[in-house]
Amino acid sequence: MPDNGHPYLFLALFVGIGAAFCLGMLGLARLWAALVSPAKPGPSKNAPYECSVEARGDAWVRFRSAYYLYAIIFLIFDVETVFLLPFAVAFTRLSAGAFVAMMVFLLLLVEGLVWAWRKGVLAWH
Amino acid sequence: MSLDAGLRSELSKQGVFTTSLAELYNWGRKNSIWPLNFGLACCAIEMIAASMARFDISRFGSEVFRPSPRQADLMIVAGTVTKKMAPQVVRLYNQMPEPKYVIAMGACAISGGPFKQGYNVLKGIDRYLPVDVHIPGCPPRPEALLHALISLQQKIAGQKLTGPDRPPHLQEDAPSEYPIPVFGAYDLEPSKNPEVWQPPTLARKE
Image 1 (tube, rainbow over the protein chains, first blue to last red):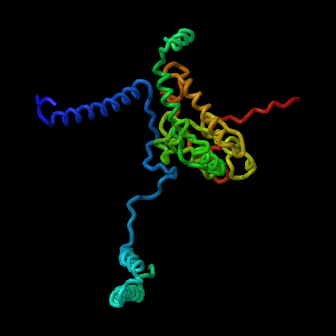
Image 2 (cartoon, helix red, strand yellow):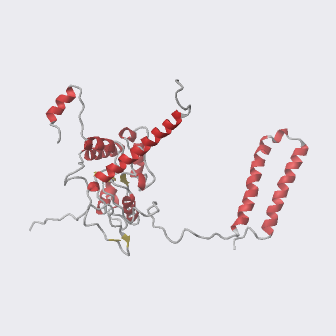
Image 3 (cartoon, chains in turn cyan, green):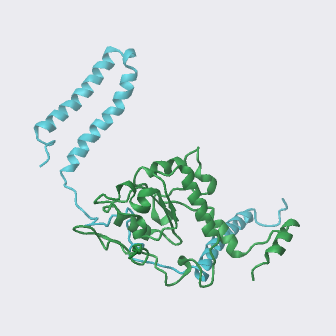
């Protein structure tokens, strides 16, 4: 490669030609549409939803804040599953201490569930 | 403007390929008809079979089933259109961009079929939409759908870009959306779109 120019000149060329290619294609499509194809907007076509059932009400609905308790309890047991899986895989090779540690962990979580249940968190008001 | 057919044949024998802008445009369009991805009843199973490896609708460039009407060119009405569903079908058609085509697939979509006497069955989607190709059959085999697609491709290939007989999507005043029927107390209101469908007149002999 002859070094008569900036070493990054090819990058600028690449960007320029790439942009010209994209814009040229878009411009041709625009030109074609302007020449032969009339635009035909309409109320259905301009509607934001495309599941073909008309939208009712407002998209800005509120969720009850009580829902977050469910979410937290779900999250705890979701994380528990992550630990349970390797525990189950390595179960036969575990020492008694590891087993007891895992059981303590599980019991703590179950205790939390029982506590939440007793407090009536699981009942939807 | 158009090239003489004989001259064209002679040129092609000499290895010179001639075409016109409209032909090139239509050639591109007819080989990439993207259908809308929806099925209404058992005909949809045949439509799915047509899109699978055995019948392979992608040989004709139509394998790209789009789940959004914004990206679809072709509506394959595959199955029974109930009166509850008809407004949704018409609205989906309205949301498709130009040019758009409709294939009514199967006895139900073209006439109500075996369920024609049903209180809630539309007696053919052509009461509301301009149908390009009707396929009879209950259900039609996938080959029949492919035949309908080829017929539609031939129709597209013959469309003109300019002139008074150009297709509706190139005419300024041709409608792009059709009125959506409302699910009324007893029937769809209106029960048909008189611009696209008129009941056949029965001539009785005296």
